[in-house]
Image (cartoon, rainbow, N blue to C red; front, side, top):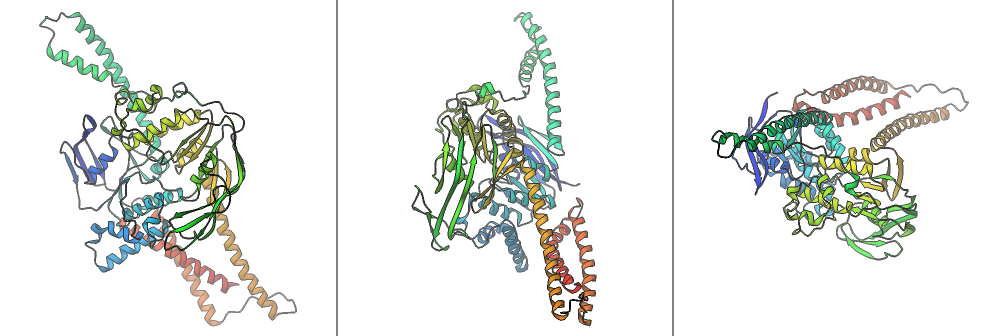
Length: 628
């Protein structure tokens, strides 16, 4: 595999904080690399340097070994709220459109429309009508549409629902692009990437293989490092004895040996520690009574009037929240609409529940009902007297940024367990990275010692290291847990059943892990498709039987319909076409699953595959009609 990109001797610091120092690595064509590091250690800075958005402090070299096109997904996406989705993506694609002729621009626009549609978005909708997750899909469309050679993606799954994550996952698995990304989604990482790169203590370590291999090899590296550190400590002990035993005035105490002593001392203090979440440090949860939250036939909904072209009035249907509010319109929003309908459930002690569903379906509204921020339009909610709720909100992060880390969270054990070392404790909050602030905000919730912990998308903006620590804490948490998340790995580890938001206010309880739920849904959908095919065949047979009975009222067994010469010729041609099309379909599936197929063949095959399936369906249905 040809080398694609060479990085040599690049560094980045902010004030006294060194993010990385004189690092280098290679990227080969076709590599799909996941970069892992704690928040605040330089992941985004490194990506911005690779994308040409920032510069190395030490000069260094970033050398692409061939002329390639680069597309960069940043975490923040600037957009024109009045533009349509298609206009927005086209506006952000100007560098890629400049050298295309009219036919190329037409194909590019068609590709944008296809990706937006596959993401479940209307290309003619206005940007101002979108939720945060929908804006993220538009940003990803802008990155995918150019079919660039090198994709640099900063947390691409943040704010996406699981359907969108799986669409992107499948797209990147099939793509021949070279990929460099930061993600906290470990299932996504495993299914897309073939290399894990770790940025640790300012240096880069590369592991070929999946996430499990990374964990194993990293543990070996740390064990070897600590073994070397133990040797250094023993050597340091002997040097220290020499320093104490030798008179200061003795000329034999060479300057170089004293310098070596201080270097050894610094090396000896750098051993890694395996972080275990201590329940004593976290102080546990407030004692929980037998009654948590009981819901009886709870509904929450509204009526909408007005035009989709302008602002729409939502009218709460009934109850203590009667009134109207101005909101932005959405397709299908005209008329009565429920976010929660006839929901009954008694939350139990030590419940560990995941809440899943697409963006905008009502999950956050449901939580607001549970905690009392909203009142149901019908039904009732009863809460236990000893209930103490800790609620980690997506938009709830508020700090006095002039305070230090230690002034914000005073529990030293908690700070240490969640990766705030001693040298960070006196830093003002304003100096923290976005991910470090998220981590600190989480600690302010845990400090409250809640007995019902509600986490709304906790994995957004948290790094994998912090997520592992949080998961260990939640597995030992002595209270009830509600998690809204699109992180499949996180859900599988910390919850044991799901509340699935199906739309139109319907909420179903599914007992099992998230991957079990997805497997169940896929099996169910496959069965539904099979049943639909059976019904089509049966209906065609009943139609022919009815026609035969009309022509043969005596009740004799109907004879197979005699085809005309033209119909027989059509049937023969259909059989030949179906054989040819099925062979083509098998060949395309083989090509798409091949890791060595040329990129241009993969692209054209993907486009042909969807049209081919539709053509097969149409010809099979006509063959059934003629064969009855």
